[in-house]
Length: 536
Image (tube, rainbow, N blue to C red):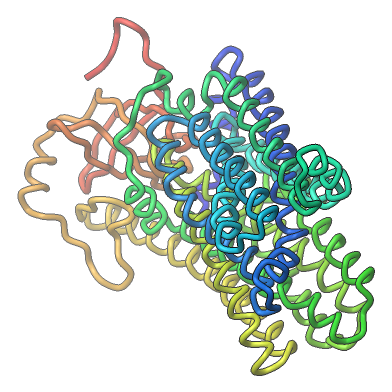
């Protein structure tokens, strides 16, 4: 997985080379953080009151958890459409649209609560879930213009501000009752009126301030332009790029472990005699663990590397689950376990999100990020549902033990997939250096059997004159004899080649072919085009 992490300096040069780009990146992060705080008001209120509303409006305890589940499903449903919109039109329309949907959904909840409409309340909660999808995608928007050396930090700052909304949301419940009185509505409607105002305010901030659009600028396009990248392209980027696979697996499993354990631990504590106050404090401590240290995790992932922080996060999740298993009857032990659960989630999520962005070329990043976010939300919803079944059938210790196994398996997969990727690269280099065997792509080199490209394709490409052509790096070139991959325009389409360079060159960098060798290998150097002197 070195190709995703081995070119921090080159990426930084690219980012800083554009006048004003660094200032624009800082402004973008500030705007996203502001929107996170405003939008978080609705999410905080929903999490604080969801169970109460489910019980009161349905008239049965069994429906208490349904509103929160619907919010999660709403986030999953919104993730892919918003990612597709971002890929086609940019971050500004995607994030603004998601916040407007969340705002109207929150208003719907307020009206439904006032009239006692349970089903309508659930519909509003589904719309409110769009705000959760925006919150997830906002962290990726913070990386559109950042360099690899600051990507983890920028992403983590947006994650950190989520804590502000999560803390303020429940705190506005008393003020919400006052607001509800202004409109002659029931007290529980008030917090959702405040939340709707927050969503609309966040949408206004991003619509007015997110100009130029960071993703559009990163793609080198003009506002309003569309790309042809689809969600299938994003999924393909994850499936065929080992670091992206590892990142997605890490973020999905960490979220599933966190949601599954968190959903039932407060209930287990309450059944064990814990007071409502202690349960509330444990939830607050857990939220602090999730978000308070996010900037630290971002800095660590930038400096120590994405994979070590991911593995460290999975290790903390395992420790948390072990503590929950051993001290299942200790209130103090369970509080400690919840805090560590949040810290492990933070480390894995921040580092894995940065690794996913590192690993996928700019054109396919938004769809790939949408696939990751939707998978993350679906995993959380499934884990929350399964947690209740597991605890009801086998008990709380079985839940945390099973969660620990998931974290261990994920860590093993991340390590083994990295080894497999390095072995594939080594086999490709050996094939080229010893046999001159044609290789269509690093992704095409299998483990244990030979990959053969089509005869007509090989003849057509071997006849091409490649020296002097320019292309784009699709898999980072480490430098020296280590191979990366580039994409070159050819015959009305594009073709990919293994590539070497004297120094490291990162994903999306423009390169010039200076030599070609048997086996679809080329030597390249960084290229900065000069107007009027474009190569072929």
